[in-house]
Image (cartoon, rainbow, N blue to C red; front, side, top):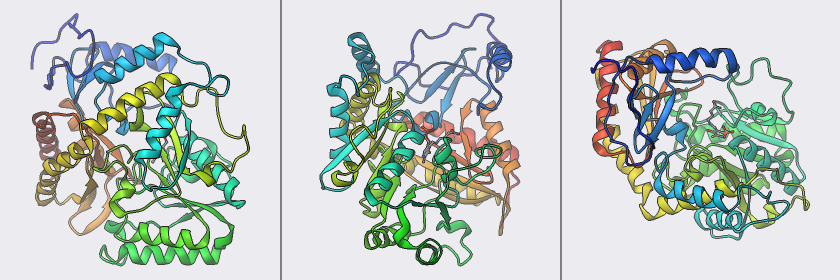
Length: 462
Ligand code: PLZ
């Protein structure tokens, strides 16, 4: 390791031009990050937490440079946002061009073409050949809330079905829809009514074993909806096709198609929350495509705009057009700068076939994760799709008890070595990888070597 620098020479900009190599010049966190952490403690509410103790200076490709000049490998993409790379050239140019013409008019006051362009792209890219409409918002949670508003308006029904381990956001309605109490809900109630939580087809933890998990869980859910809510009372079933914060749980085979079929028969709208899985993350443009699901409404955010805040609800024209004129909106919803960024990001995802890149990332990564699983009994499950992959840590072989402390220790060992990895899961015992699609093979493999070193430091071999 090089000697600490008193005045680090920091890059003037990020983007793909940053050297794509890990480089540690101080301990993590370094002195500049520690000084900022002190200012932060005096000015930022403690409820807002961070995974890594370093402050960002510039980022691009698969590298994030901190304020001390350390270059870290980014296997988090800011929680599945910067798939096209951070500060991607085309996104930066589109943002600069748009901001130089106008930053805001409010679409509800004087509309602009960029908003329409994003809605056209969403209609073209989302599953299903039917006529579609979209409405744009700012955060994922806001879009989920609006999907529920639209579903209630279109069906005249109140109830909303959600699932164990689900994450849908931090606003009042979406807190009610999110499963996990700590830290998302504790002390923040009372919560919105008419939200009903159902069992999820979680193959690794399904009592009847993984093989028939999808089929058995779907049968349970359908029975519970019929007997405890009444199918005719349900406006929408909202589900992440692969759970994000819940631990990258890929529902057991057949679960999603069976639920979609039941919803269609019962007049319940099938709403896919693709906030985390959308825009090529799972190796398809949308995760629903892996199981040929055509949702009635699809909620997107995160990866849509290369790092700018933008979210959307897209769906069947007749459903989307149910709310009264003026019933949907928001001052910043579909900000022109975010829309310009989205048009650039979507163009990159399509023209560079970043979904194929995400599948290639899985091909490089999964064998390595399985090899770690073979070596260490604490790795109970390896799962995910595309560039959305995870390992679940448990007490030991045959003991599925979640092991949060060990997951945290492996994550901390990665962080000390300059690798950004995130945890997830209801019990906090899942390590998840969300690399940017544009990461080079070499950098990804180096990141996986660092993960292997961290496992060797923390875990006992079988
Ligand atoms: N739906 C499926 O993954 C956001 C949350 C980070 P917002 N996930 C990251 C945190 O701890 O706040 C998410 C998601 C799914 C909805 C959301 C909410 O999206 O943009 O964070 O509101």
